[in-house]
Length: 222
Picture 1 (cartoon, rainbow, N blue to C red):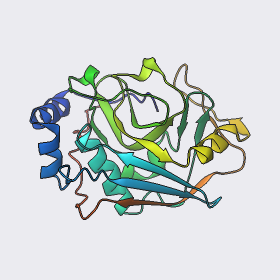
Picture 2: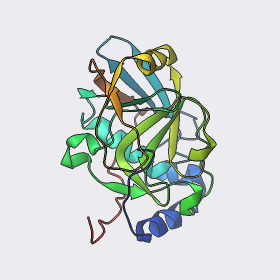
Picture 3: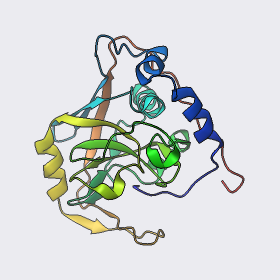
């Protein structure tokens, strides 16, 4: 969630070494054609029939974009319910890796607090990966920022932004919610009373591959 404890700094070091080369060059080595400026486009089709469309920026967060797109291509987001709605803050589809072991892994944070250069700000409409806010990010858990929030800047990996369907985002922000127990201090979890289901999550990568991301090695404590 904008917060999930996990980690060592070794994967951060490895990722940082990889991306000290120009962002576009790294992105292109992973199949993204930045020269043509064709950013990947992700479409979340809700059960309501409405679409939320996102544009990803792999030149700013190459490994996190790889992770997100790889899981989309495997269909692992399809049929998942949105589990957390915090009006004025975030909509977060999951804070527990969607209860799926295949989605339960970490990657290095691609933001300034982790020593990664050039991360984007968490402005209204941004799409970012959850994490511990220090050096790590979830490989699967993402959130949509509902308002500019400087507390998130430099602490969470921004992978893109919503470019269409903001009305659907605002509709979900307003749905009735119910509290869910949470054992993380100072974290509020409210989920929709009536499930909001992501019926299909698809990606247009303009012919680029979606290889697995570089994962962070599990720590001794799990």
